[in-house]
Image 1: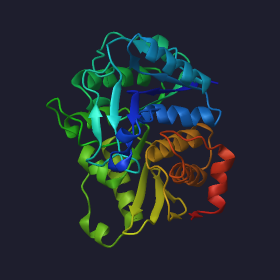
Image 2 (image 1 turned 45 degrees about the vertical axis):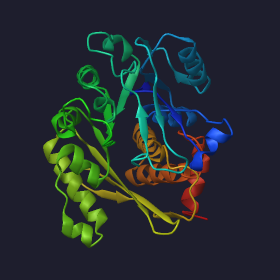
Image 3 (image 1 turned 120 degrees about the vertical axis):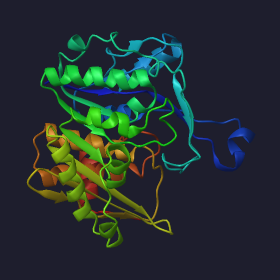
Length: 338
């Protein structure tokens, strides 16, 4: 069985405890992550063959990381050893990735300085039938954006399915280009696009229908967004949208939609009063989509499993899921978690 190749920047997440406790106790945990690596980890957990492509400096820390990933059954043979540093970011415990309290320290990382003409894509993609990346990868630098396009062109020539997560990080995009200048040129290669109606607006210029939003007609808006994407990007066959609503209390409501050219499929609505960690939930959803499509599950099963996987991740500490397929399916039997 061929592999899924997940391509993007590996990051180390350092979550300082609120109130400066991490300073008083000299404790600062480290989580290995990055959007595409979180997807790879989930797929490996679900017994899917997966390889991870990134750039890391040639040092002992990188070796420890690669050994750690190999123990998780992630093929690291395509990791490129170049550059001088691994990207970091600091996110306070319990905060959302989109929070303005998120502090990135990834400038001049190995991945952001990797250029075109270095990777032998023909060889790297030989054992691959799915290529995944996110909108974060081209956001870190101009050279990373060019590298993404080089990879997508190579994957398309080989007939490899391609997916993108429309992750929008306003704290990135610091090299003189706006997302709308870059992302549409990459989405044109993609078979599966995942995001939400607001990200599609920010990254692709898909208009928001304010009346549908006021009416809370989110599934209708998801269809509208999907149809716009299908019209603009003929290669796209699936469009998935997530909807997570954090109320004034601790309650969170979560559901998702999957559109094909002919139909829309909607997941159950999941609810919880407590969240352990919000990081990586969207990545887990993306992994669930890839898992379902690659295993030729029916669309209703695909979107329900992906949404359950994302919801279950909210109850796990760390960047990537450790839940098995069976544990995720259990959430489908009980979509309310207290």
